[in-house]
Length: 276
View (cartoon, rainbow, N blue to C red):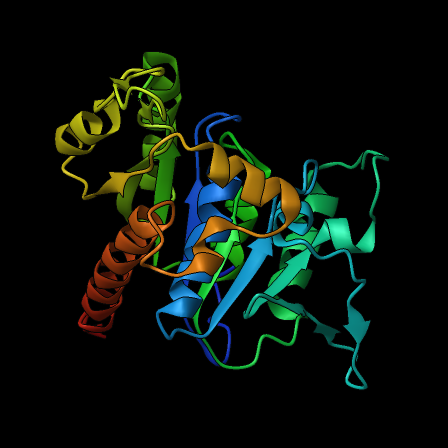
């Protein structure tokens, strides 16, 4: 009787303490904006941080980080990540810049993800943030087959359509045995700069209700602020202004909660005793 080939076992990255994936069930919810600002916030909070842009078809990290520099190859054939705003970063957008689309099949995606993880000179990191593509496809499977994840964060807007897809992302992470360490509600509400009335453009509070429903921590809500979009477009994310900036405060609050949850998840994983 023929046996199916064994699934590859994930191997820890030397020097990297925690790997956290940032995912969403659908596009357009600001997942990369959250990933970039969380990476910078973690760095400003004293952590050594790396950021992988794993959205191979739509790499937006170079624009949002304000860097188009092509990575160097070191003497040991390792890729040297770009160091931007205090965060070590790699993206296919650095290697294949411009508007030309990349057309590739699943095995090629898998190879790129493995290279970004294993052939990049990350050095010593407290956190490696992985900005996933939207949806529930090949990249997530490649990621969990290659390295052990500390956990995942799911980003959603409060709208019912977005939350429906966010629930699919939650189920996907459950299927691949990755703990979801929190949900973030992005574009939660908008405060009119003139009359200061709070307007729930995409509804409000749905992500927090979903977190309670799935018994998953709610990390916080990010207000719909033009400065966040402007910062991403200019390559100067709002978190560069520091935790006291009104536009950045909530990102730093989310980053603090993410650290607490990731440390708890890492401690729980190290407490597992294998009995032979």
